[in-house]
Length: 218
Image (cartoon, rainbow, N blue to C red; front, side, top):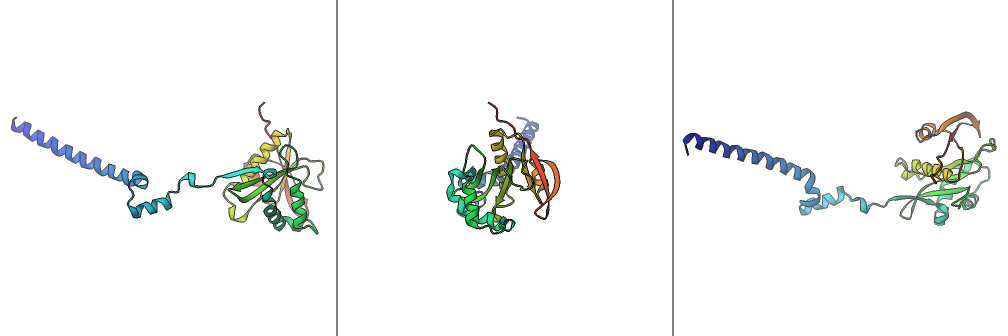
């Protein structure tokens, strides 16, 4: 082998070693970023990984079910709704509200209520009712009673409850669904609801909105 070839061979060796070092460093960074949490945790790091990378299978999924199938949710819902809206009905009681909700325990006809659950914990509810404005009895049916417990808000639960009632209305061949709201026009508009009118109800300015449910495919 000539000196030129020797020099080239040494250079190639050094070049290969340098490349190997670079690749090793890159791989080490990749391992640190992507592999360590699952495969290379030390005992101390493993504890950190378990806390910071909670696996989805350990999280209880949120389900939306018919209240008819979960009557144990009635007391919590009646308490919540009475605290939120009891002042709108003079002389109303928790027991009266619970009785009304009991009447909403249907699956295939109006009125019906759906409830959001995480395991056995009640998160919120929404209802499909025949009437919700005493001054507009010609309009029917209505999305009503959308409520999420304070500690569970801003997690998308309310939107999922509304969507479920929209689907239920479609299954029941409802041509046009109504709601009224004081403060949540933008929220409902983002879910596909359309402004019908602005009016006053129970000494408040409210917005009446409509939604045409999609009919389920045969």
